[in-house]
Image 1 (cartoon, rainbow, N blue to C red):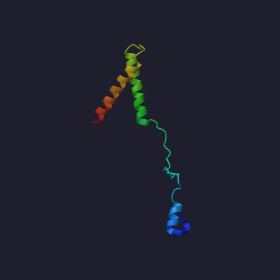
Image 2: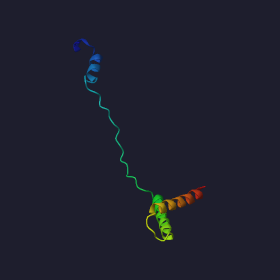
Image 3: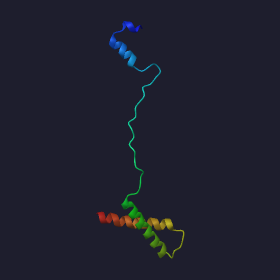
Length: 88
């Protein structure tokens, strides 16, 4: 088809459309900078209290090694139970 025989709008539409075999480029919105995740002050305080209570449990057992995870989980359970009871 001869472009001279086309009207002005038809010529413009033909020129502005995507070229054969080419895809339009999709523009992604800019990504905002995100601060790295760090524990909040309250989480740090809870972690410190759990650590202290776990050490108390370790000492109460006669400072025997091998149950650090159990001590930690028990301390965490105790403190979180107290914390949720205080909220209610």
